[in-house]
Image (cartoon, rainbow, N blue to C red; front, side, top):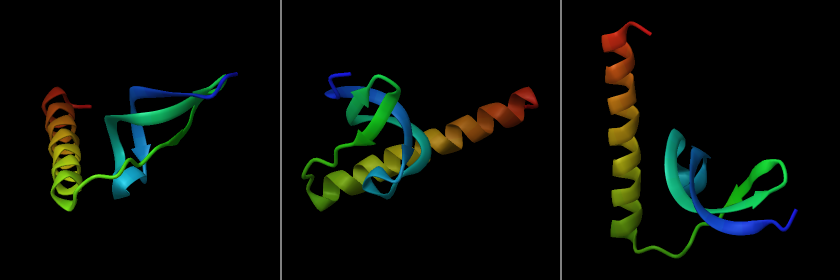
Length: 70
């Protein structure tokens, strides 16, 4: 249980105000999985781009689920 910081993809629950989409961000990982994300200092333009990526991924998942009837 070393609680290492790793660049893993996990469902975000508020990191950079992003929720309900999996993105790769620096994450503290312990014995039981994700402990917390680490918000590194980003320029406002970079934060906006990250949020935009999250929105695109969320919409893509929604579209795929609709098409397969899930």
